Structure formats: C-alpha cells, structure tokens
Amino acid sequence: MHKVIFDTDPGVDDAMALLFLHHHPDIDLIGITTVFGNAAIETTTRNALFLKREWQIAAPVARGLAETLDPARPQADWPTFIHGDDGLGNIGVPGTIDLPLDPRPAHRFIIDAVRADPGAVTLVAVGRMTNLALALKEDPGIAGLVRQVVIMGGAFDVPGNVTPAAEANIHGDPEAADAVFTAPWPVVAVGLDVTMRTVMTRAALATIAEAGGARARLLADISAFYIGFYEGIVDDGMVVHDSCACAYVVAPELFSTRSGAVRVVCGGIADGMTVQKPDGRRFGPSDWDGRPSQSVCTGIDADAVLALIARTLAPSHRA
Ligand SMILES: [Ca+2]
Image (cartoon, rainbow, N blue to C red; front, side, top):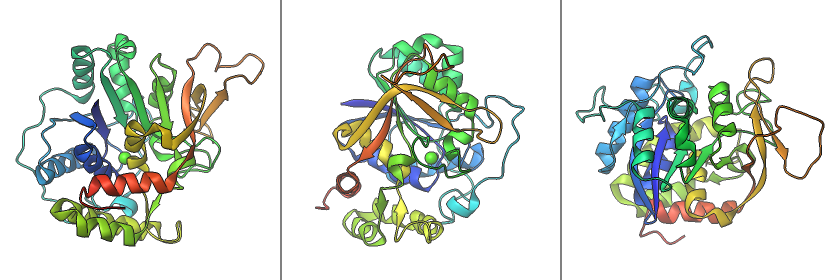
C-alpha cells in the first residue's frame, strides 16, 4: 500500500490523476495539497474541494502557496486556454464549495504527515514544486523520512512545452524545482519525455465514461475543453501528464529510468530547463557534483499505462 499526498493544481489532467489515486486499491490517499499554476490558488483549491465533494474523497484538502518561492519572479497569466477559466474545462464549477479546508498550510500538512509516519509517505507532485520546496526549507529533516517523491515535470531529451527549453511545472517555479531535485530524498521525474507519448483518445475516454458511472462522466465533461486544446498537437485526444506520475507509483515496471543528478536552470533564456548529469558519464567539475542521483523517466509502455488508467478510472471497464 502506498500512502500518498497529492500536491496538485487542478487542472484538467490533475482531475483524472486524482480520480486514479482515489480509485486505485494500492493507494491510500491521505491528503490533497493545492498549489497555484493552472489557475490562481483560490481556484485550484476550490476545484480540489469540488472534486473531493463530487467524488466523495475522504482525504483532507490543505491550501498551498499562491506565488513562487522567489516572490520577485514575475507572474505569468493563467493558462485558461488549456484548462478553462474555471480550471476544470469551463464546466461551471460553483464559486464556493461548502467543505472545510485543513487548517494548516500545505507545506505544514506535508511536514506533519511525513513526521507522523516516517518512511511511509510518497509525495506525488503534479504542479509547481513550491509547496515541497517550502516544506524542505522549514524542515529539511523530512527529506530522510519520505518514501519517495514522484513528480510530473521536466523535459530531459525532448523540448519543453512552455518554451523550447522548459516544461510548465518546472518553468512555473524553477528555484523550487531545483530545491526538490537537489534534496537528499529519492525523486522520480515523470516528464514530457514520457507523458507526451501517453495520449488517451476520445474513444477511450468515452468508453471510460460509459463504464465508470457518474464519476467518470464528470471527468469526461471536464476533459472536453482540454481535448480541444490538444487538437493539432496530438492526433486525437488528450495527453494524460499527471496520471502518468500516479501510474508510476503503482506500476514503475512500465517505465524505464535514467539515474543522475538533476539541476534546474534558473533565469535566462533557458529558465526552467531540467538538465541531468547521467551517472557514469565523466565531465569536468560542475554544479551537478555532490548532488544526489535522481531518476528521470526516459521510456514508457504507453499502451499499458493507458490500460491501467482506464481500468482504474472505471473499475468495471475491461481494457
Ligand atoms: Ca497539474
């Protein structure tokens, strides 16, 4: 069983990932922490509460940070053209959801949960790494107590998606991402190298919606706008970025990884670029030296991951 805290900025593909974690029998979802990114923190937190209510998720929601670790960084516009004005595909999420938030800020929730169960908690972070970086800053000792950190983020051997250099979650807070990659905890980066190959077709989503009942139908409604964004980028359907990171937690054998220290470029034209120094390769002295080796996903059995997601979202569905 994997005890998971889901750090998220819902977000359409976040919603699918959340339903995956909620349904998967090997996952014990112990908390949802929100971060700004796909929308402002008020919106992503409201969306987390909305999904908690609609899907009857027991895990508490703790609100996270509203701005980058370095407050001097300029704030870009929200990507409403991808996730809609409401962050969930313009389905008309109510303005407020009458459910309580955990009283703690997200980073404190993470620290407390990790300290309460040393060695047991997996952090799955599919937004900007801001909450994780602040948790490390406040309590560096948690690094040795976390089971693993699985992130959706980065672009290693492929171009980025916000700039040619950088993927969105990393580009949104490069300093935070560098802190996460260089901390002494095991990080697995599930980045664009593998997520861009993992495309759920319209037909597959429709099958899930048919088999999975009301929960899956809501997910399909949320996803329609996002599928529109992906027209012209993929042949048909949607890239399931965040669900890939969740699939890694329960089925790492469906991925291949490369080990080595990872640094994030902070500033300049390659702002937010993720660069790995592969273990075993010799270089001159560099800023990668003495940093922990982390795992970067370089390969994926996309068909098997999509089948796993389909089975999990709609338990009656046989892929
Ligand atoms: Ca996300």
